[in-house]
Image (cartoon, rainbow, N blue to C red; front, side):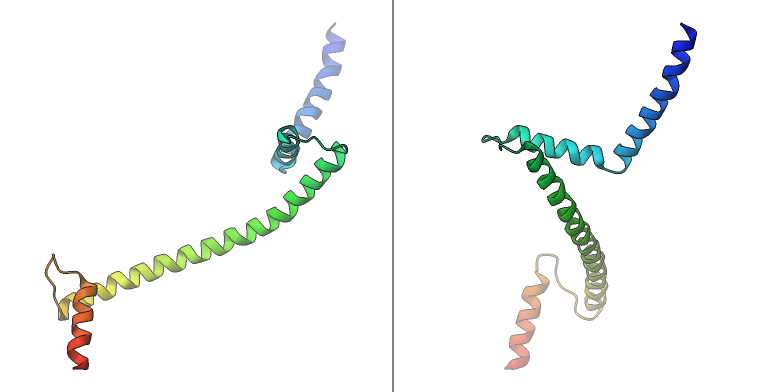
Length: 119
């Protein structure tokens, strides 16, 4: 019995190592998603393998586009944060020269000043 157990362990460890590789590389998620989509199809395709392959190819193309969009969002988020900081700094500087009441909206006061200066 002990010799059988010794033989199974290397195979199990190789399987486990391969499973971890598939999980870390995203293969398991992609396959699971493709199979779930096939399962949820109301009209099952006659070529199930072709359907799964098509879903996997679309996943890959969409993944590249998604990564590009994520980078764009990250860049724009940083830009928004920078602009918010600049806006806050400018408001503080403006408050020194043109203070306003708490009840008064700064945009309203700015529009009133524009009307006065154009007259």
